[in-house]
Amino acid sequence: QQQVKQSPQSLIVQKGGISIINCAYENTAFDYFPWYQQFPGKGPALLIAIRPDVSEKKEGRFTISFNKSAKQFSLHIMDSQPGDSATYFCAASMPPSNNFNKFYFGSGTKLNVKP
Amino acid sequence: DSGVTQTPKHLITATGQRVTLRCSPRSGDLSVYWYQQSLDQGLQFLIQYYNGEERAKGNILERFSAQQFPDLHSELNLSSLELGDSALYFCASSQRGGTVQETQYFGPGTRLLVL
Image 1 (cartoon, each protein chain N blue to C red):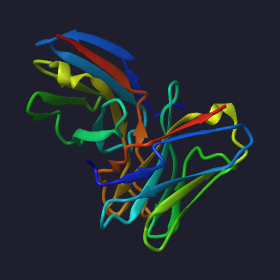
Image 2 (image 1 turned 90 degrees about the vertical axis):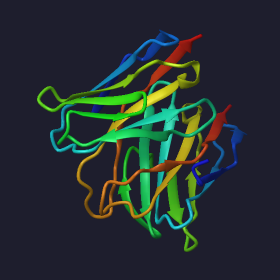
Image 3 (image 1 turned 60 degrees about the horizontal axis):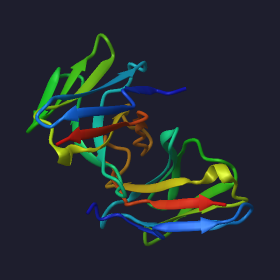
């Protein structure tokens, strides 16, 4: 059972446009929601993360919007650039216990920003 | 560069064989996580070690095993390999791995191809 559902699977956006990737979850125990960016041939790297006590977090051109009641969160990339072309993963985790910091990852979205 | 190293980068082997993947965490990180990334499954958590002890198991097959050594490097052993085991295997590390929700830093991965 997929704990975190991510859509779309792939996304093509023109340079300068807005890229939007959505994730949904069921487990209300999740309280930490990171987004990872993965370039071809590289491992995923943390991009931005949010906790459910805020509805939005912005870092540069990247914004996470969080809707606790709908159990959804999304990544918005403003002024998308060809260098943003990568695969994006959302993730969720519960408060850690017993030295366990497990992340549940979405299936990934392959973003292609056209010049 | 995340500071996590993985060897080898690529591995080609035959069905029924056994391979060992190696991971060195970031300096000072005590936790190591192993993930499998296949085309249709996204990032699947396999197992976590914290300071030499197994802490959590995910979707790890019985044919797979791992360990973390006193110098904190980790090895993932895959045996009786099947075609379906072909995937990217990522190692990630974090500082403590359980007391707080921490960023996991991913290595570049090992691409395994089973023929």
